[in-house]
Image (cartoon, rainbow, N blue to C red; front, top):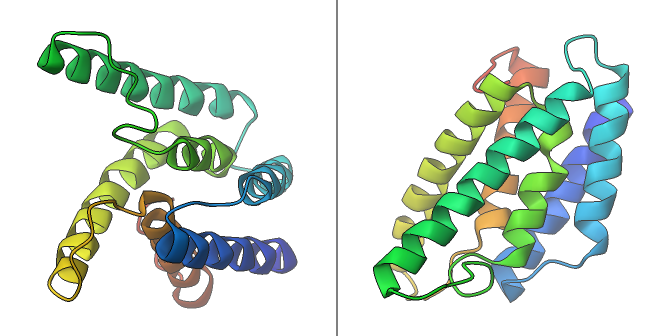
Length: 158
């Protein structure tokens, strides 16, 4: 389990740096992340495969909400993917679904978005950027959670 958590952390570091620098992530990273998350889910006593479906439905509800919100706001059908949220961010959310039960996933989702907002506002004081590297910020947040959980036995959102 230590090896998989270390490998997960390494993949998340790659996601963070790639998204932060280029505002895009390579397609291989979420695929490897998803496979690794499935392995962690399989060997975890607390997680079940059915929770992946619940988490995917939660992500789908959020994307549908974004679609409805932006479509009503602009009074025409708007695809929020790539115009308001990146495809990499959506794929990242899907890739990490096996790591959480539903309630902790919702908590991670909310706290991760707040963390991303605070971090991005802090970075805009130094450099003005229009896009937010959401997958990168969430990767950093997940790394902090993994380190806190494994080294200090503190559980923020798992």
